[in-house]
Length: 124
Image 1 (cartoon, rainbow, N blue to C red):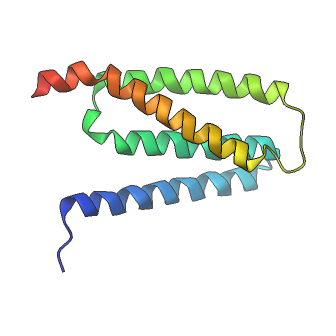
Image 2: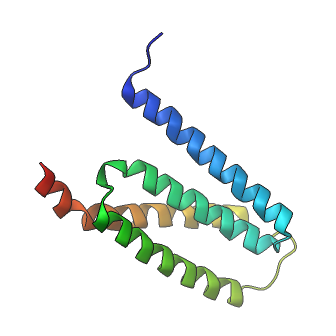
């Protein structure tokens, strides 16, 4: 049975996402992070893994510089939010975390897509 290249990439993307997320969960548990830190660690891994694998066709110097800047901005926002939020036994409410994760994935993906549009046009 042959798998098309697109389906093969989709399977690899899912395996990558699940594997990296599992590693983040394991590291968070073993490290003894507070529940809030576990939540944002996993959120960060999922958001950036989804965006990076989805925009594989845009990989290049502009893309990776933009990813680095967006990651730094994300980290600063996360640090600020975790300082402001009260400590909770079970971390950040998961429905709220999911909503922010989806919104952040969309925003970061859109910014990266627009930042790399000129580079993609010059390639073709």
